Length: 349
Image (cartoon, rainbow, N blue to C red; front, side, top):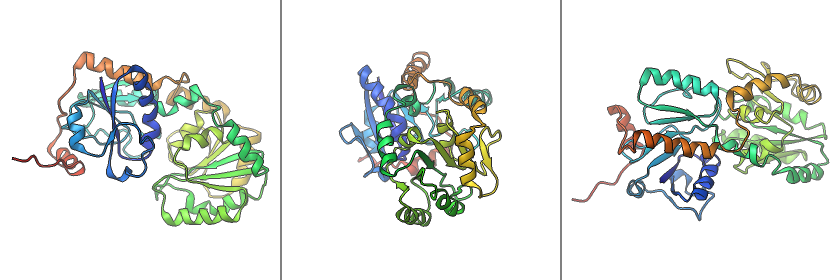
């Protein structure tokens, strides 16, 4: 079989990498497709990849795997949505844009919602597989323990605190927690690691970089792989970010500020204050441990590290039952949007 790994944003690399590894083991053919904004960010230079829609068209995929929200309707192949996060409360997570033939869901919470939408729209299938980005949780959860130990020793700290807010201007805590983060760093037992989304406002990035330069036990981290820091951290501070769920699935405490989830099963604060006190309380008492079990069961109960394999097998199952579509039927406005986003070269007469 032939697969396209379809990328529009840097976060797609960490989601699709386990699938690429599985395809290699199986001996399947694959091609990475990258939009121009990723020209200097692709981490797998020796892997087959293209920025050219025409080359992608000629590749004639059997399946196109997308962590993003759009895919050209005119490409051959099953269009598969594999999602870019776990925050179901975020606007658009359950929006049906009609680009996809198959939705591969992360856990029962998502499966139920998309099955309800399937009954309404009747133009896609839903299979629960787990999420490949989290396969490392089942395969190599201690991968960065040595690096963590070294970092803590270098900074004479005993605990690593990760601050990973969303970039969304209406949801981010970053402008309001600068002083609280500085106050937290007064406790030299804590190494505070700042990890921002690629789209965080430049002026906020500058403020936190300046703070890190001033405080020895604050590190501003620009490495793109946030999973590395989720695995290393003892506790995380955030807001309404999908990484909240990724961290909770590691069964470790989270503190959020003004999270807008319908059901909050962790320590959420409505005022931008008392950060140090909340960190101490969560590390020492961990009062939300039992509630985290609910999140794990509902959002991602798979701890075997095999979600990428299940995704590939789910695509095979879909193709066996439905065949490979030459294109996806779309309403006129959707077709226009895709044609504008992914411009094809005009054929020479």
